[in-house]
Length: 456
Image (cartoon, rainbow, N blue to C red):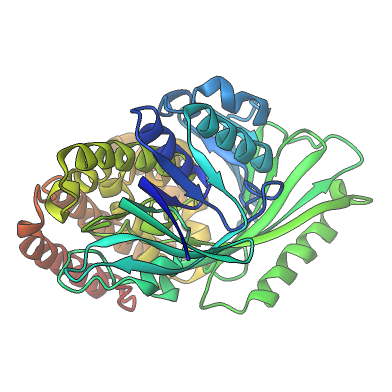
């Protein structure tokens, strides 16, 4: 069996993998990305195509590398359709926003990583994780173009996506790595690229629409005024074909899609859960979807993946330089993720928990009564506040949903408490058990308050 030796091996050529590898290569280390797709198909990933905050992305891959993939930079708000209330909410979206061609974006980040000096091995299917007698991860076993290969490395970075095979194969006993993972914490997504004959009127908006169950929602994101990413996301516990039919029915009912042509179809899984409590083990770090680095209320994962890649790459460089790839020496990667966005995403996940226990019509009625800018804060920041005047106006409009409002208020208080707890995320693995115990006690109160089934 052939053995390839590198300082770092990265599984997966997605956003997190490319940013991690580019960060490492820029520091002069030898790094390879192993990717199961062929060179032509690499970067072709099912996605809503909305990209937020690219102006502040890490510099390991220069922003001008990404710009050819930007197809619509004129989007500036969300359009939330609530047919139960015969209402359309216009919700401002904070920060820079663009709709992209995700395949072209994938090609560009791969090219950017190649520019940095990253090796790419395509047509490479990982089938096992190599570990030594102490449990330290030492590499990967794979098949490349039909030939068995072993990749030996000081550090393995897992960017292999949702429900990563690597995590099924690795033995994490005796580590803090989060193994509290199950299908109910994930969402399936399906999208079609649709060419419409005439420009749509809402080419400056991201359009959302709830299905008849809170477990799913539809989206229409305009790549251009005539090229639309039409898709839906739904919890893996739901019947997929029933919800795909919801998308097809909605497409048939929209006059702007009459005579449209579907040019591409693709599906994927993504996490709708809090980030992994710990995404490190000796010689190993997980990044992006493989570590739950996705906003659980919007499904947006590109920005989190880019920064997780940067933080993991920088920590890998330090660990290799130190000759110390222990959990302790990789731990700062965890703290940087939690400080930047992980705690906020964990707070947002509380609202996902609540949504599983709220009647969908009550939920839509309540949303229709709230100010759009406050909804935007809740969706992206994890917390919001209102002046007395706004509270009075919202109370009048939301008459009939006060029981649901009380439940939301109580849940918001717990989400804020959880956010504060994540501000105290431990600085070493030794303190993890106590921190987790206190966090789980807050979550028990969330389940008690919402009436939702335990998610973790």
